[in-house]
Length: 201
Image (cartoon, rainbow, N blue to C red; front, side):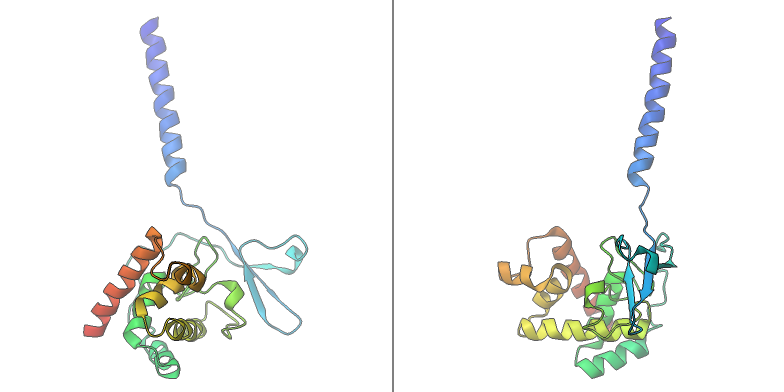
């Protein structure tokens, strides 16, 4: 009798552990919604507010990102080159930032709601003249403009500008260095590594 109880307990425990493990590794995805205001400007969100929820339509259903290196790294070189010349930002640096942010997936969406190749947050769309964050050219041009602003703000210190792109300029100014956030530190290292690689290619 005790053996049977023990076996049942072990089976139940194994099933429970498997369920918990599966729940822990199952990724969460969110749909992206869009609405058009009276001026024809597109507004994107992953959480429509109750007051405007009826105005939003599903723009994309978020799906798991493709494996790393699954996108063509040279597909957007023309758009990157144009943005580089217009805003005076290194082509290789822009490409490194895109590689790190989205791995060249133009429809990438972060859990925080950042969108497109250069992972622009919705609150920055209007200021950066972005109507469609999933349009590669618009996204790259807007991201290049923002990066240029950060480079100027931090007087040409690239690593500080890159850190500000990830953590926000106020965080960098607060610490007067790369903020001691693991994500930001890893982000800066990755961008600089890819910058070196693309600069030599």
